[in-house]
Length: 322
Length: 68
Ligand code: FES
Image 1 (cartoon, rainbow over the protein chains, first blue to last red):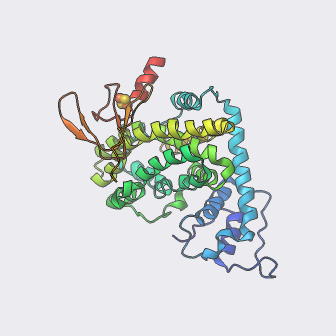
Image 2: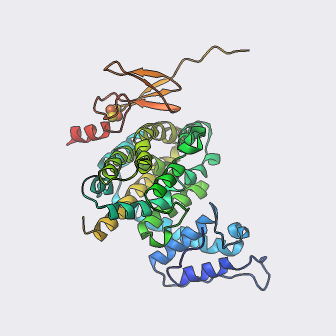
Image 3: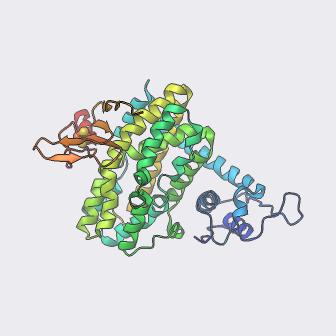
């Protein structure tokens, strides 16, 4: 993957620095990134996405040395801090009920959260162009599916760790590279006439799509946010089986190739299992061992559902299909 | 030294499926046999799945209906 196009002055500064060489702190040539006061949300979202991607696959036109360079940490810290603030304010405004058991908090949340459904639109009404546009938006996350959650593994105690690995092993194909979920999505993209290169469609990614990716990376990269990371996963898995079936039906209706349909088909049964394991054995065990994480789990779960609802609203508005 | 096989753990999820860990063959209501293909499998208990004998998440929609 090469660096995307910046979306504003902050992105321009950061990307220019990344194209250069890393210098030691104190070196007169060392980069100093000044953050402009007035910034647009898509400039922030894209810039943070780029900074996070240095920790995943990186960019062909950026030196690998940049990953932990001090010059970048200040900007990353600030952008993450502001993103987290924004998510927490939205969460507080939503007044999400917290039950006495985390499994109940999560069940109530996923059963009562309301938002438009892209899967239902695809199942019944979407055109082929709309389906392709949705797959391009989804490609940002699906091509690294499972990866942000893997950052959390070393931060957990025994029981939630063992349960999380049970889910992650399945995400990564149970030892079979051909069944690795992000590989199945890549094959689906190729056979549908789309590009399967990692991050290829970032330039057209909507702000809530970038924010969803940034939130899940931020939750994974900060030990402090481990509860939110697992809550996010719980909400994601709990709202995946039924929509995956609707998406598989929609893609079949539109004549998409079997490889693309197989990706969603796989998620119907896989996520029906993952939901139970993540809610009960991962989040349930985490909160038993660390009771202070209950509300954090709910915060992460709500964030996942809220950003998905924002994505759906934006896509449907674009298609005039709300 | 071979260890005696551990008994299979089966988990009943409230309002949801039955989880089976490890390899198993499930005999469906119509008598057909289905082998598990993943480390953990979910067998439908609500009867509403479209992929019997496996759970496809439809039980969530039933719970939603019961509430309204
Ligand atoms: S128990 Fe999940 S669909 Fe029946």
